[in-house]
Length: 485
Image 1 (cartoon, rainbow, N blue to C red):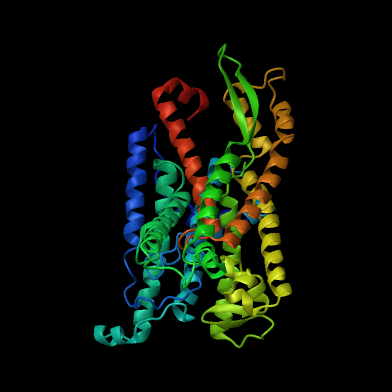
Image 2 (tube, rainbow, N blue to C red):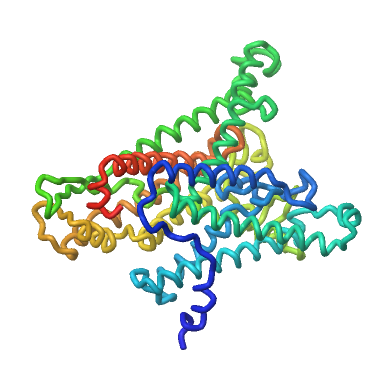
């Protein structure tokens, strides 16, 4: 008896969001998407009962926007369990250890059930150290006020985190089946947009425009002239945030341009005379979502470091921690760089405490992980989301389209796709990894990381394209029938 027969009774009973039986109108999709988005904002403002405000660990602050984390709220783990479960399934599926055929309806149900079960397991595994390894501080006074033990209050906090992780799992499924885009992408956009708007306009958060308003009125700025050495440093690297503004605008421009760079393969319909189209193989063919997987791996590694630091005596070569962050050892060198002051030793900041070779080693490791990891996970992403040459050829064949001048044959189509898709996937994945590191090193407006902004711009662009496609299909139902939408 194989694992599928043993696990089937459990996996097939996992709660699911029902697939719509017919086409969902575009306006209804927008309503579902907007409703889930509002629910996400609500959950990020419901704080965990039993956890004092401001007592959260600094662990996820750097990864907060990427993983849609709401520190100290029901969204404490964000999409981290979903992403981690996806990594595990991609690795297992890529090596064919699961033995599941996604074209088989029975195996599809098993795969979806396994994914949900893994997300729940990952949520529990993340919630346990969050509560009992000191990553969240549980208020002992509240336990006595409620008349329960400290363990009882810790179990209450643990249950809230698990419930939040399960809620975001099904919110993602609702958007994927009934809305526009994906829930994971939507939550990333929501989290980053909040921080970006705050970084631009909030006086309390030292927003860009309020700061420059104070500079113009002479209420802020360095002592002496603004055009001197200290003045320029203040305006470019300091509270003036000119470098951060430049990087933010540059990311928008570069990502939009990269999304528009593509190789378009001409197509014609075999049964409808004059019906023509193009299949675009974009430079960022695998999208930027594989970057989430790479950053999630880094987050999990740093998460492990925090646990070891708090629960066991850790040798100094693994890491020495100050104020919750590694300052030396293995966990320091493998931690991503998220701001200019972490590597610009000549501008002061934390980098001034290190030798140049130490900074360069950390930068080199971050670049290597992101570039190589971006290319590897892009390949995994393409193969497991039916975007590879074989799957794409089948989709084109099933839609009735063909490449002019070539026989209408799946094998022929696959060979044509193999000329472009694998190469573009690797180049695009590596390019996105490079852009993510460079954006982090230069810094962005507010507390948004460069990777988070990169993800947001790309996901928003793709969401715009999907909305435009939905509107086109709504206006021309025959096209929806033709392409199986």
